[in-house]
Length: 205
Image (cartoon, rainbow, N blue to C red; front, side, top):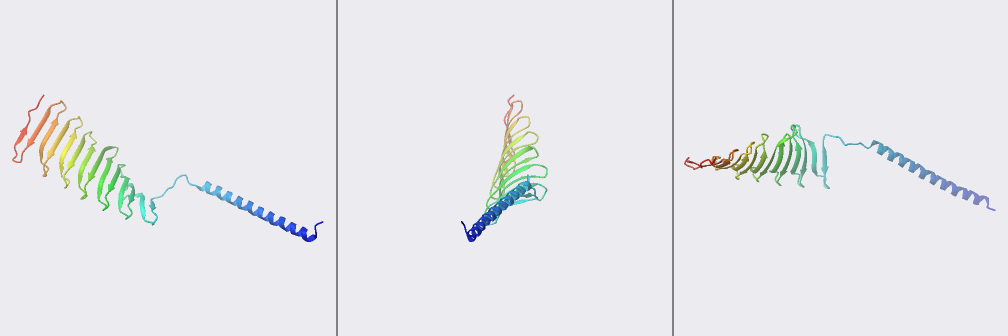
């Protein structure tokens, strides 16, 4: 038959197990309630004026924020903090994608005016456009090549009625050669020399 001391010891062990079980149950209940509270407060969307993303060193590498003129843009910077890529929308809704070089100079830009007139421009290290392809709002289209100073030298275009034209210009912007085909299918060639003399090929009907 157990002694009084043995019965007290057994009772104490039973109480310790009961307290441990009770504490575990309370902890589980609190954890479950907290999880439910967090789930209940989880927002369906994240709203704010701007968002900045940083790298491991704490430097801001991407920023989503309003622009100075009422637009909105996502700007991505390199490790030195220089903006290299911009994806944005102007106040009138015109979208734009711009790429910059390591010195911050614009190198390429893809943009559109409203829902029409898309334009792609490539720039050299000095910031001059040397290649451009665009579709105008009137339905005409154009491919243009420029020299190192951004002066247009070659233009290949089509009019809204589909009339194609190739124009070559000198460094002063004066057309020196013009080749076109009318909407009726008649070709035209115009050449102009430095002396002002003009040669026109006969029109073939």
